[in-house]
Every structure is written in structure tokens, then in C-alpha cells.
Image 1: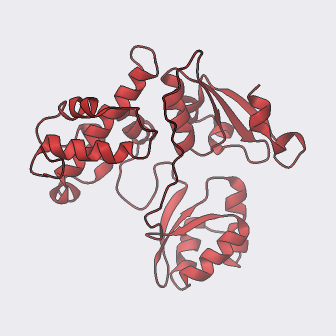
Image 2: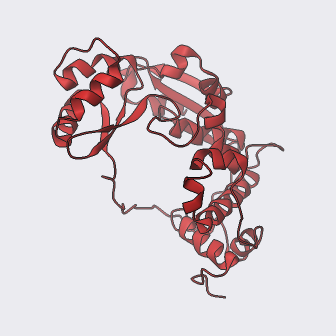
Image 3: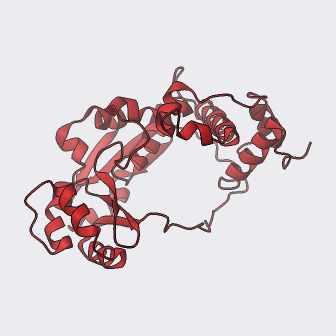
Length: 283
């Protein structure tokens, strides 16, 4: 069977999983297991699960254009994630790959279409010549908007940003945002990247519980470390004492969901102690 034959659901899944595994150390999953995982869903899916359909878009709009091959590859990815959970020795009833991907939106009461992110801090803003993704997750980001726009902000901040941006060049706004450390990017600017992967000739055998030092912030990185923690790893989360996560300040349900059970340490990264927090956290 040729994995390039996209008329065959199993072949499509094999091709997809083999591509995913190119980004991981060799030997994690052999070809036999790839085939077994691909055979979990031997037929084309007919409709997304309720949790996933809420992230895709209005049923009468987005789903009409929905590529079921993408959904099939998604389900294959879930099977691979579930296999890794079992391999890490996670507890029975540990996280599923599906919950890893879809649970945030219903927890926060969001759906997957529109111009606002699930967390509410990122919005799509139209400029004179493009569309920008503007993320203002922290109070200091919001306080920097006046300097970014070079204008006084009194009213609804997002209305002010949109009214200013629609008459402004995206390049100018991007350059100012970079100077201020604001998370602003042009939609579609990211291109295919070449990722350098360090491979090992053999798979490490853990003689004790794996330890993960998490230096990420916001939610994507902590979500990954949460998945590893629920799968059996010990996770040490390191934060900046000067820029705490907004979720921590508000103790949002999602922040607690992501970080409960982790060891959390805060450092001033500008201090001598904070220069190498990871080494301090990993004796």
C-alpha cells in the first residue's frame, strides 16, 4: 500500500503520522505501530465531534467547505498523542489528545469563529493594507497602546485601535509594536520553517520520573507541560516576577486547570539569581 494514495483513509493516516514523526527522535514509533494507529479509524469521518465542530465554525457556513481529509488527519494525531500518554506511564484516565486541543474554548465559553481569540486578549485588526493580529494579554501591554498609536486612549481600547489602524500602514504599526515589545504580527506573515532536530541513536530509558522545566508563558506552552505532567512527568514552571501571567493574577479557571500540580517558582530575570533560573530549578 502506498501512503501517497489519498483515496485510502488508512494510507492518508500513515502518510500524516510519518510526516509528524519526522520532527521527533527516530525510534519512538516503528512502522508497524504507525499502521496500527492508522487502522483505528479505517473509514473517512463524516462529521466533526461536537467539541471540535464548535471550533471550526458555523455549521451552515464553514462545514460546507470542510475538508474531511483534514479531520481524518486530526483524528490520527489524537491517536498518536494518546499512545504517547500511555508510553509515558501516565495515570489511568489521563489526558486525551482530544481534550488537549478542544477543551479551552468550552471552558471559557468561546466558539472558534470571529475575530477575537478564546482568551479575549488577541483580535484581528484591519489596517490600510493588511490585517494584524494584536495581542494585549497584560496590563502593561494595554498601558503601552497610547505610545504604540502615538495617540491618547480614553474610550474602548479596541475601537480606538481599529479606528487608528484602518488609516495606517501595517509596516509602521509593526515597527512601533516591536520597539514596545507588543505582540503584534501580520496575518499570514509566517512561512514554512526549517526545523533543526537533534536526534539520538537510542531511546532514553527513564529510571525515575521525568522532570520538565517550563519557561513558557501564556497558554500554549503551559498546555504542553500540563499534558506532560498528566502523563507522568514532574513539571517546574518558572515565571517572571515582573510580568506575571494575567491568569495567575485573576486565578481564572483555565489558569488553575493548566497549572494545578506544577511546582511554580518566580524570578526577577534581571537579577543575578534570575539569569539562569532553569539551572536553579533542576538540581
